[in-house]
Amino acid sequence: MTWYDVYAIFQGAVFTVAISLASIVIGLPLGLGFALIRWSRIPVLDRIVVVYVSVIRASPAVTLALLIFFALPVVGISMGAVTAAIVTLTLSTATFNTEIWRGALMSFPSDQLESARAFGMPRALRFRRIVFPQILHSALPALVNEMTLQVKSSPAIAVLGLVDITRAASRVGARTYDPLPPFVVALVLYSLIVAVFVMSQRFIERRRAAELEAAR
Amino acid sequence: MNGLAIVWDNRGVLLAGFANTLTLSFVAAVVSLLLGTLLAMALMARAKPVRLVATLYVDAMRCVPFLLLAYLIYYGLPSFGIRMSNWTSGLIALIVYNIAYMAELLRAAWSNLSKESIEAGHAFGFHGLKLVRRIILPPVFFAAVPMIGNQTIQIVKDSAFLTIIAVAELTQAAMAIQTTYFVPFASFVAAIALYWITCMAIETGVAFVGRAARTRQ
Image: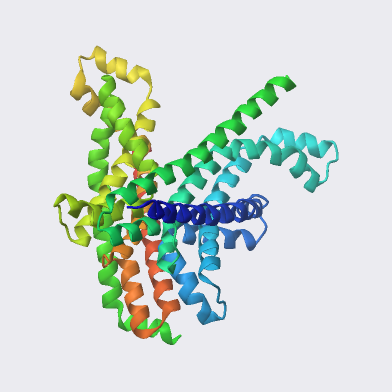
């Protein structure tokens, strides 16, 4: 294995990070939206969300990617491999995010909502000022955990012919007939990515603890 | 729809793949739960080196994506003279990967166990392995049933990755039908429907065991 091979796997890492971040950035608010639909019990829509979460949560990312890339053109929606990959990962992460946000919303203390209502706060303001800042912190650990799971399921997009860390490493292995070194490089890169997520979560939690301490 | 008719005509292929997915997932779930129990005991062991090695294994598995491990076992082990079919490699990858997750969720349930029952066990003269087997593990398993169910669903989903190393499982079967007859929509929707049914069945089973556990108490 040459330095160029390491560089090739590193490029795969850039792709893995980019595609994971894209799906996380879209998937977080999407999940929140779905969770709010269920929380406020909007008729019909909330049933649709229940079925969506149940089906997508059960489908493997590989199968979902194949469905979106090969099958949606049949019904007139066609997209490139990169878009299909982002859509796949976004749809699957959004289902898990929905459940996490919903859990945080369900355990939100109702007396706070009632007192906000008593002060005459409109619904949107109530959510923005009272509910959201608090559920963001209570949902954070589970959300970060889901992000790391998301990074780990991203190799599924290999079936669309995209080159991420895993695919790049297996290519180097196939060419040099020595698969172990590229896989070790890949393992180190994945560990680094996961570590960045976990460390930023700890940083945010520490800052939050300091804020709460200062407010006291 | 015409596509669904074609998939129905080829239901033999799809169901063979489905049977393969179920076999792989079932064997992987049972074996990884059994070996995961041993690893959980190592995670909770008093001897520090044992605990350290077990923690290292769990942490390593939590950093690797499943596909990378499957590649490593399928392409990497032959360099050490160990050759296995893709089916066996896939099954071993599923087991090796999920032992760590099973052990970790059992450990979590174990550390939530009340001190009193363990102390009561001591008082009744239970020690060592007998204490673990008779006093600790039964409530740990009952508490962990929902998590074990979730992990089993994860195993079913992970098994779809094995299509990339050409294991003839459900996704591979759907892919085979789609490449022969070009009916991508019907074949992948059928595959996802089968995955969905499997997960619903697992969730129903978990709810059933949960109810049984509550009535037993």
